Length: 297
Image (cartoon, rainbow, N blue to C red; front, side):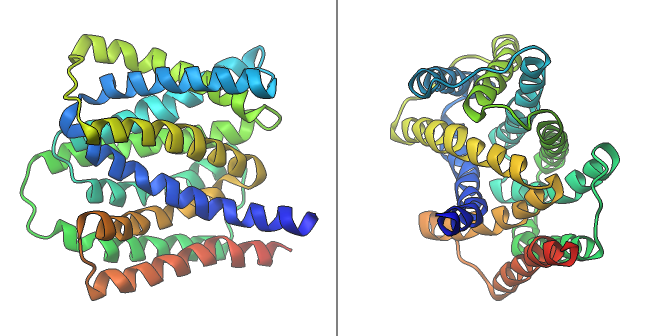
């Protein structure tokens, strides 16, 4: 029984990577047909309704007192700001692959914040793994940067970077304040906070215009069920069980995984530099997680 649980815990991070990587593809499907914060507001509202049903089925306990505000703040950072900036950037012409490059900085930012806020120690192997991972991601996504002159690239990069900083800060707060909280109850207040943040932005600065078609409907269902429910619960489970820096290291695999999925879904090819980058990225994650953990024991 214990061996089965151990194997399950080992599989969770890689299942999370695969699910999380599909978020960029979901945004690519959805954003031509909807405005970002209007789309996200409806997504959050439906997710809240689903979580209410899950709370009833599993008789989960909701957070109380200050834990409510912590969860709502995390929701604003995770979903309102991070997703909002990524979706806004893609809506305004920032390529999803470029967003993947910015997301690749998340482990570095999280490690820095974790050291300052949580007192997490950064080992030499983690530092080496982080550097190697950055190099691998750059090799995977560099070909997509060649020849780009679009001014939206600058603002998209700024927005995406701001979102990743918010996500990293949310990871730290989640690790620090939600150790004993029920995952479903915590997620409920996270999405409530995200909805309170996103809905006014949608009403003030956007129009609720949706061009309903198969791609938009598919994106809604996929992003709600697989990302908002499945991936986020896995992420909170990972944060609860591991150091924030170790969890963040798995984000190095997300851009490369997205590239592979894009190959099968959209016919985007991988050149030799990108294949080498994939191998280097995997090595970086191993250095920052597996070998770093062994060095501590």
